Amino acid sequence: MTNRYSRQILFSEIGEVGQEKIRASKVVVIGCGALGTVSAEILGRAGVGQLKLIDRDFVEESNLQRQSLFSEEDAKKGLPKAVAAEKALRAINSDVELQGVIQDITWENIERLCRDGHIIVDGTDNFETRFLINDFCVKRGMPWIYGACVGSYGVAFAFQPKLTACLQCLFEQPPEIGTTETCDTAGILAPIVHIVAAYQVTQAIKILVGEAARAEILQVDVWTGTWRTIAARSARSEQCLCCGQHQFRFLEGEEKARLTRLCGRNAVQVSPQHSTQLDFQQLRKRLEKSAQVDFNEYMMRIQVDRYEIALFTDGRSIISGTDDFSEARAVYAKYIGS
Image (cartoon, rainbow, N blue to C red; front, side):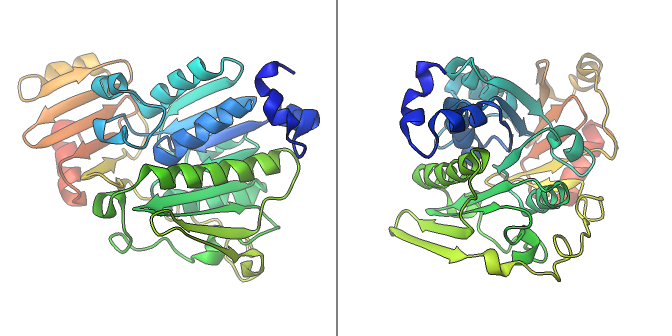
């Protein structure tokens, strides 16, 4: 074992044996925003063997206040977050096998992208994706570490199939759109991101070295200085449609959505019904007379009227300038196709 991890090995609950387990682990981080980048950095520095980073978005200047792996240069180039995070982590620890994946997690690809993982760390910004992760993990018996924060408040919990309640035990359905605060409405402080991510990674490491994580929901408000834990083991229900009755509605596509509002952004993600492989050269020729177009090997940015369209090679697009589904769908159809 290299000297790099010597202080971590000195921690008796990990030791040499625990470090070997961490080294043999495969961790999937879904979402490379605030929580995802902080979690990924701690995991990378801890020496996990394989780290897969999955994200659908690209770096913007407003991310830099709290998304710790990104630079001004990443934002200037509009790099996909998965690419920028992978690049930063390679400079931090070349000993970790890294894979950045520029995709949106859906019921159609979660099995292919996550089946080799030992644990999933949640860095997402919406409940639809979390319910999908919950279905997948319950079905496979894989632990996943939930985390969320907004304003100065954060919450985290380690879901462990058969040991704890699952997400659907706690919430039967995702909250209705517009009923919960987002970074766009309440803002966010960077310190709460680091607290929640640190707790998430701690629980992940405990599981990876063979210990059970805490069966308690952590709630923190860093501004008021309040901390609370809520026991969740007893919340597990045999009547739960997911972990009790093994009905995986989100995993089987029954709850799929092709349009998603993005947290903290006046933007909508539009996903095509079927994945494709776009030819950016051909598309530029079609669009350059009516729009400002720039692209690299990962994505194309289209400026037209009051919208910015970030278009990825699989046909998925993030349309900034509206949070209205109908308007976003119309913009996509007009400039990209239906």
